[in-house]
Image (cartoon, rainbow over all chains, first blue to last red; front, top):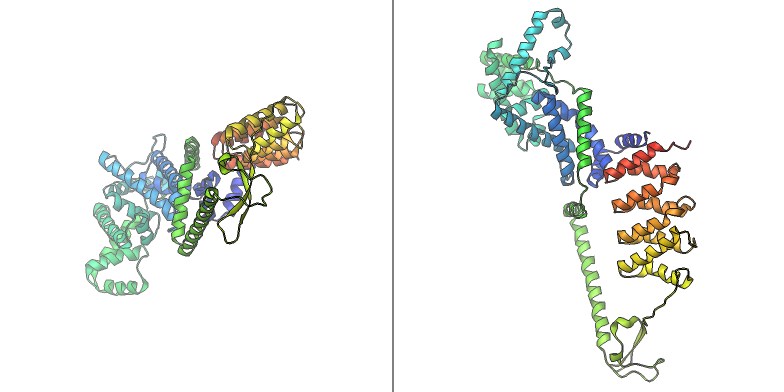
Length: 204
Length: 327
């Protein structure tokens, strides 16, 4: 039985995004599901890298799309849907970061959903590190140091640095997503890079 | 360019955010300033270090887990109430009307015009009812003093004629005469009245009674004339505003869904369009004898993906998976 799945695929391929959004606003669950599929990978990628935790990334995914479902009626096509969704996600990520700040969790180690450490660097293929265990250890320690340094930034600085450096978004877009100006996003980036450089000065 | 400004431009340049003409200006400054060149080196080193915390693609099982959890949460949400949907639609319409002031103005003018016309006609009707003048000599029927005719017994006004140069007006009207009839359900006259009642009666209670009686006749296998009672039930199922009446009509049509294509179409229409989830749900179970039919399967497929109600979507999927597809 693949009738509904095929219908779903046809919906995703044929309907341009605006049409999908209008259908979702009218109550079509299939249209909303199609929108989720278009954005879920990016949402998880951002949430996973920022939080370092599969469990937290899943929570952010859940909250973001439930919010999107609840408020899609308010979307007025004044900005792109991409910006709208990211605005929801970045706000949730900021809340997460603020909660962590107050709990003072150790940010240096990545955990998967069952609580085991993920060796991030194992997923980065590099012939040199495989052949040189000492170098591999160095890189892992570097990764932890970077995590620690990022943890010392304010939530907003962390967010802007994440979106600029890791996600490659333009400062103007970052400003829109954080509901601020490009100028403010710029200044936040300057502060973030300055702080990080100070933190990591001893490593060179 | 002072060094503090140069430091900021170095960051922007490193992230591809510095306009080309300013890059040239910055390069000129860097050639001459050791401090700023060092600053740039430091920033590039930071970027390299930051790459030791690479972005990874979310694993497939994380995506799958997240999706399943979201689907469950969405399925568990209560469906939007009609007033919530209406208010969302109204707000969206108002918002889009704001972008179309001409259309909004036109709408207002048309609305005012319709309202005025309605008011005018109402006032006219009232004036006519209150008019009391001597009836003209050539009036066909026996004119009655108005006091004997209660307004509720007037079925309709058929003509109004004003005598020239006078304030005397002749009004012809038809009068309602209440009657009653008693007989068995097999009596064609009684059935005919019941069928009229199913469409015409102002009260949902009367429509409910009539449709209930007619449906019971059909289910009991008594003579259910295809051209008569079945039609009345299909009309009730399609158009009655009251869901209790529609439900009774649906039950009455159940014995005919296999043999009568029109009945099947009416039930499919109810499955797609009826606002009441119970009725849509019952429509699915009534369609069981014909669930292998292509048209039925197409409708079930649409319902399985787009119905508001999660149980109905589930049941549709179950039915689809049960019946083998016709090749």
